Amino acid sequence: MKLKTTSELAFESFCEANHLSLSRISETANPTPDYILRINETNIFVEVKQIDKDENFSSTFGLRSPGSHIRSKINQARNQVREAAQNGNPTVLLIYNNLDPLQLFGTEPHDFLAAMYGDLTINITKENLVSSGVFHGRNQSFREDKNETFSAVGRLYRNQSGFAVHLYQNVYALAPISFSVLPSCIQFNCVEVVNA
Image 1 (cartoon, helix red, strand yellow):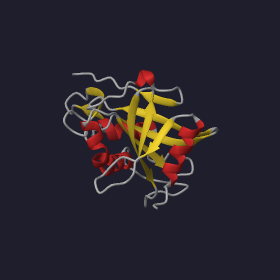
Image 2 (cartoon, helix red, strand yellow):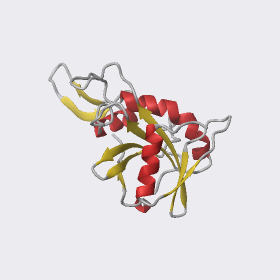
Image 3 (spheres, rainbow, N blue to C red):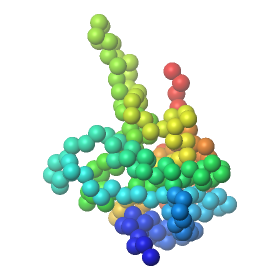
Image 4 (cartoon, rainbow, N blue to C red):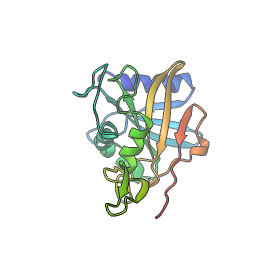
């Protein structure tokens, strides 16, 4: 039997502490998510990943590109949730920071948004130095016709009372999550798409 990862144990602890119905999915020859989380009458398929190493990390200093850790985990997990999403089920990727004792390096809110929707960008014209304003530009993992299988990507982390989950909505999801039915123990950010 395969040993559970730190992130899987953390997610199971979160669900147990919050009395959430959770079932482990048996591994098969085909890629599958780790769990089914049942909330009301909805099955949410959940894949849990963790960040274990980064050569640029130290306890005193670290360089990174915003969103790079999250983008990497999105790429690793997309095949595992594809079939569930294509069958109309909401899917979630949870990422646990097992690298940084403060659980921040690479998993802060701006990392999730940069990975999902693109790097924060400002266009400035050379002629009159006029700014376009801030927008999400290159390096997005989600857009129409790209990575529509994820309903949300979220942060699984330790807090003072145990473990917590914070989700970030994928507005391009094949099977969106109805955030209004989520229990209060699951925090979330809905995203508004503005067409220019």
